[in-house]
Image 1 (tube, chains in turn yellow, green):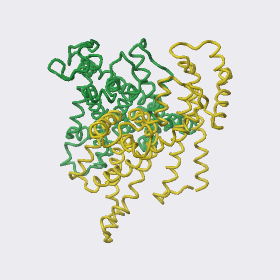
Image 2 (cartoon, one colour):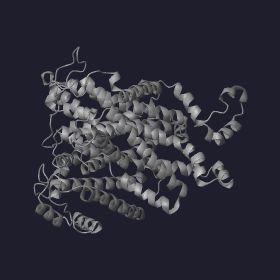
Image 3 (cartoon, helix red, strand yellow):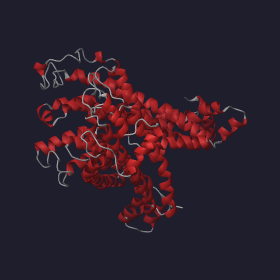
Image 4 (tube, one colour):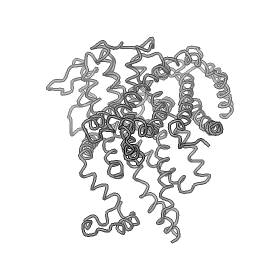
Length: 306
Length: 315
């Protein structure tokens, strides 16, 4: 196990360097990092010169990148438009987005898996068709439409949930979390259904039933555990989708999290904040995927990490 | 599409030991078999009709409406649907029906070209990596890993942020930027799929036989490997087409995808989605959302139907 973790960590290094380099090149070399820093007009020459000196933009590209990454590793993501440290802005907002993402994950696992199991064990019956068709509709509706409509219905008309989640407390974030997770709930239930249906045909399930096990145990313990492996993979890969989706959800519900910060930075054309935030989010995404990979062994003892 | 599959047909025909009942099925290839299945699937027909309607709408919007989508009369701003304007008017007094019809073009253009981009680049790199193996495989796979590690929406934001569009940017350039952003981030998905299909097809006897007969690598790839590893890629690409249309709408919604004066469902929804506006004029949000969702739904349904037809195991 230790060896496997080490190998995966080493494999992550080139991907990490590659992605951060790509992001850096895109914003600092291909784009114009001073665009928008002086409002709706080009920046004065002396400001550009100072900016270039501050961010080492006169050095060769690789040196620039190395210096930037050195700063990032020390926790310094530069200062934004308002002269605030980007890392401090992100640290202040991180708990809110983490709460939002965990609420979305809970909805995904609880609703998604149970709907998938219900559909899978009643294959071809009403429940199965209901889940398959309704998830297809949910997948087709973009998250910003779902968000706006639920905000109107549950927030404004019915008043069950707060309309906005400015303070970012758990109770305020329930509706935004559900919206963020909505499309993934649909994917998780479809995946659980497919995977369960496939496994229910397997020999070991027939053996379990033939031995006289109760159906609940044959499905709940023997089949479900194996069926959840692709679901766990999906949830890990989908975490990136949640991070991206948080931008939309946080915009709709005015949540003051990392996504909302990224959205405002884009609106203000604040290149330093955009790069810093995206780099952070990509690193979080890669680490989460690593953790998910390591988690396989727990679910499926056949997978050994040697 | 049927000629290159002779090897499979031969083995299939040899395996069929009941020629009397199967006479009609003789010579069925993977694709004609799939087509026979598709024809019986109602989901396929629903999605095919929807897609056909949206394609015609994108190509010839004049067939559906004679109203100028750019004509705005502020006196009508946010008026509810009526006999003159079936879908009502938007905040600037544009006719929502005309805007919604003309909006199909952006979504279809972005979806189709982003999918073609990923299909061409992804298949090319996937075949190269899978067929040649060795250091080229390692290089291309690691390159794919790097792009794969950036979530679609985040990467799209970054690319479109770097190459911003404004009012003066020509329509096709704006569309091209969105296509490029989605394509650059989407190709590793296809490349990985293609690579694994190629690795499955490569050891087969007919590929070995072709090589023994002295066929060039180009010929082996084009006439044996490509047709036999295309199925999975086509299914995923169809579903992705829907996903790219949704991604374009999301990027436009965030204000960095398509830019006005371009007409797009994402832009229309973005303009209509302020909380006050949804209460006062829900029709502005409703109609573009329905069209957008139906388009995405159609492509996902088509992909599902094609997958079921190509892979009967899943039924």
